[in-house]
Amino acid sequence: MKVLVDTDVWSEALRKKKGKKSDYVLELIDLIQEGRVEIIGPIRMEILSGIRDTATFKAFSEKLSAFLDRNLDSNIFVTAAKFFNVCRSKGIQGSNTDFLICACSVQWNIPILSKDKDYELYKKHIPIEVIQPRKRR
Image (cartoon, rainbow, N blue to C red; front, side, top):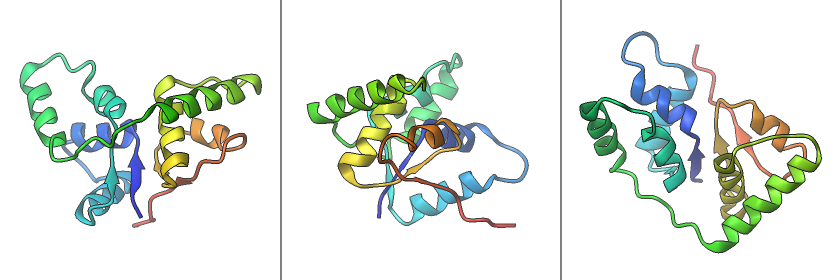
């Protein structure tokens, strides 16, 4: 089964050079090796946004080029807006990208790997599956 990996996991994997890798990064490495990673354009944009150093931007962009974006049709955007509205009506704020990720997860029937605790709030009101990395210690 494919897994939609959120920006925070990618960012940690790409930016952290020293020290022990987190369980999330190790899970991403396993997913990559198994060919089970999904990425969408908005996640790619979030990863690359804010990188001021041209060389770093180029290096990250090249690493990410190994992964093709899964196409988003208009139904994904409509579903994302619906999820945004449902959560907002319950007092839960979220980013447009978060709700696009949720919509993709539901439409494609795949789980999300994220360190972001907001997904735990979302899943109380929308039918997403959020997975945790396997414990490695």
